[in-house]
Length: 297
Ligand SMILES: Nc1ncnc2c1ncn2[C@@H]1O[C@H](COP(=O)(O)OP(=O)(O)O)[C@@H](O)[C@H]1O
Ligand SMILES: [Mg+2]
Image (cartoon, rainbow, N blue to C red; front, side, top):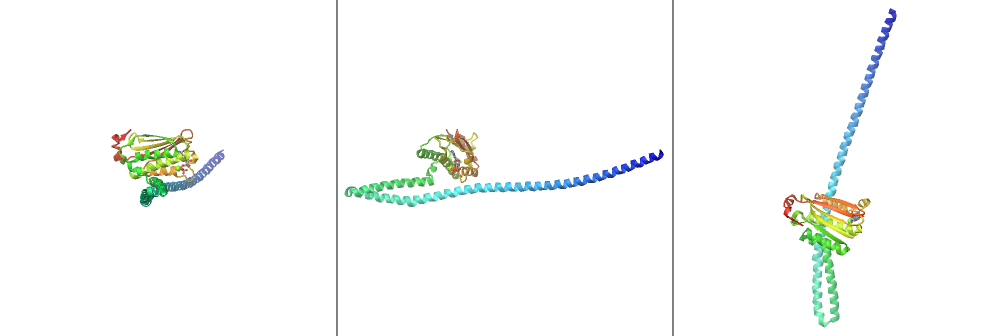
């Protein structure tokens, strides 16, 4: 009986030792695993941090290249305008002056032949007529290259452009405006950009919209900090695929030109309601403070 008890105690002690050994080995295993997991986790974290950094770098590079692209587009637009200006001046100075000199000569000849050489006189009349037509088209080309009407202000230029558009396309237009009396709210570049945007939008309507009416609204935001121009047509609308067309840079060009001076473009288009391009351009701070009495309905 005594022996049995002693055996039992030994048994218990052995069992306790086994359990102790097992526990400490399990502990070691757990510690090893925790260490391993921690190392793995650290690696994953480091990889994540590296990925985030790489992503931030890519995003920054993308931002930079978008900025560069915007600047490039603006720069190209500026070069284009300078080149147009130079060609307009050359045509005016060279071709224009020569045509006027030619007109003067033929007109003298016309006078001299009036009574003495009726047949020659008739030819001079036809020649004079042709020269006048040529002068007219040269003027139109010059004006197209460099719209002199802009010197009378944005408002006058918009009116003229809409009249021209309507004359050429036969489409009716309506113009609603709250126009700035003080045209100095925009720099020359901005004025020209707004005018070119209107031209591009009207070209798009003529080429793609199949519209019958065009509506243009000009005005200011309630706080007078933004000028806006909405150009609407009642045509077939712009499809989602149309905007992504290859080699179609008109709308993208408008957007980038606006971005260059802090403006933006919103396109609202449905097949049933046609298309509205809304552009907004920030007004110089020194100007919007005074625009309260500078706006006429
Ligand atoms: N007012 C509009 N109505 C209908 N479709 C339009 C209009 N404006 C643009 N689009 C569509 O969007 C496309 C892209 O226009 P845009 O970027 O100006 O390039 P492009 O005129 O050279 O094709 C056009 O090809 C046309 O399909
Ligand atoms: Mg276009």
